View 1 (cartoon, rainbow, N blue to C red):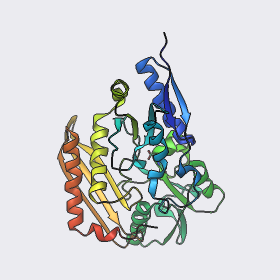
View 2 (cartoon, protein in one colour):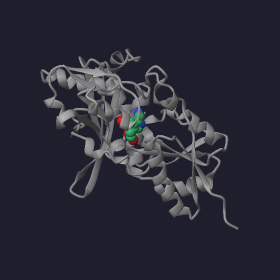
View 3 (tube, protein in one colour):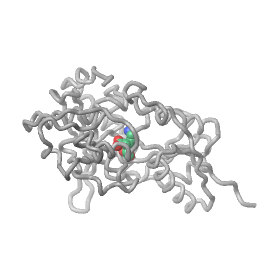
View 4 (cartoon, rainbow, N blue to C red):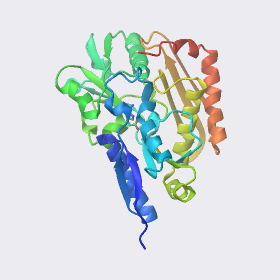
Length: 319
Ligand SMILES: NCc1[nH]cc(CCC(=O)O)c1CC(=O)O
């Protein structure tokens, strides 16, 4: 008897379908069982309001999680940066595969880099995190830019530049890579200038907690370093008591001495959206071997950032 196909719940955007398609193929290879994509429409896909107003990026995840909890689908693939930091007990984060490029990317007219943008340039991003860091860079380099909130899928956002409505837009490099639009990038923004969102570039594969055999199969896709890194980044976010639409950037990476991995470094930033104040700090520690250790790294950095006034910079949420 052939076993029935696994059902993989996915949003219907090109980015989500591509991400889900890759994971579906890998699961099929690992388990020998077919995987069928089931399209789920989330509130984040249908609402035209700005993300900060509809409660942050958790809106993309809720409907998928309901489909998991009800058994309508067996597992789901999320962009990890869209996952709220609280993990529901009935769901298991079964795998965090190897992370794509975590950086933000600039898509500008005429091949311009960020530093080459003219005074008054209109830069499309509604992300308080990107606004805070880009405005801070501009202030420190005597530039004047104007950030403009935008929404929509990758193609729509790039379209603002092609149509001449904006001078540039900022998107996650991972998203552009995944939908085959990497050639549009005019600058990959250094993480020294713009720290990405916690979890950016990583995927989360989630299934029902009671489905232990599926969780074990999905765990084959897990990359322990990526998982440790995003766990530290998300722990920082949670300890700052900030949501996924807060002006918080974080990135954990490994520090190596030649081939030998020595430590994990975690960098974090919080700022006002106008870029007039930023708290940016970094810490290093032994490479975490457990979830508890990874979370401790994030909490440690959060405590240092809070001691430097981070909480006072996160007040202006709804921007
Ligand atoms: N908030 C939307 C979102 N969620 C995940 C990605 C891109 C892919 C990723 O970071 O994994 C994007 C688009 C963007 O920020 O440009």
